[in-house]
Length: 127
Image 1 (cartoon, rainbow, N blue to C red):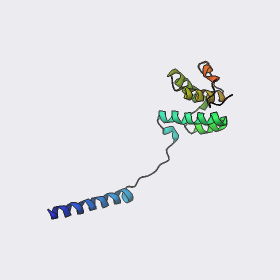
Image 2 (cartoon, rainbow, N blue to C red):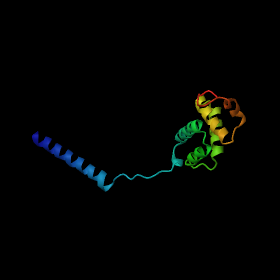
Image 3 (tube, helix red, strand yellow):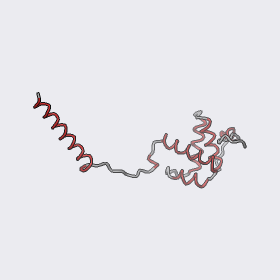
Image 4 (cartoon, rainbow, N blue to C red):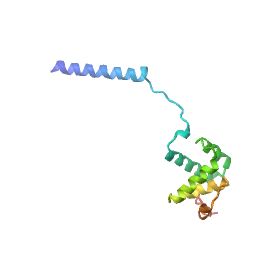
């Protein structure tokens, strides 16, 4: 019985050591900078909402466009417009819609479906 336990411990240590050597030396992980355009659509939507929230605070259209270009969109204003209309059509969260409408309006892409959300202040501050 003792011989079995000793063999089991030695085998576990050899296996653990071999696994560590393999994982850290032979086939270690490689970190690759993936483009943001490779994100899943839900994460791209979340990122766009974060940019819209930032725009509601600083009102800097150029910074918002630069940040959204990282998603690899050909035309940022049309992308924001389409996303805003999709959120309106799918009855998305009202605060998200307000933020997107403010950004879309800042980009010059205000459409009739967005009009009823236009007057609403996305930051919650008094006008």
